[in-house]
Image (cartoon, rainbow, N blue to C red; front, side):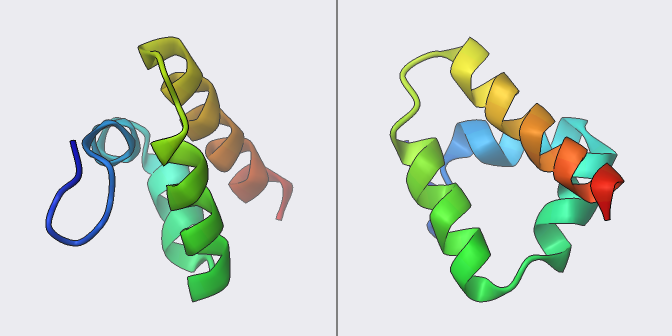
Length: 63
């Protein structure tokens, strides 16, 4: 399922639950965000989506 803004619901929920990931995603440029959204659309399980969100949070910590 995809929200109207194009953000997959699982990604939106994951970002909402992880402040570091949300901050990291918000600081990405449009191309980076597009890549993350495309990756999220390919996720087939809750665990995969959680790993993606955790990776986004880790990127923010590394900056």
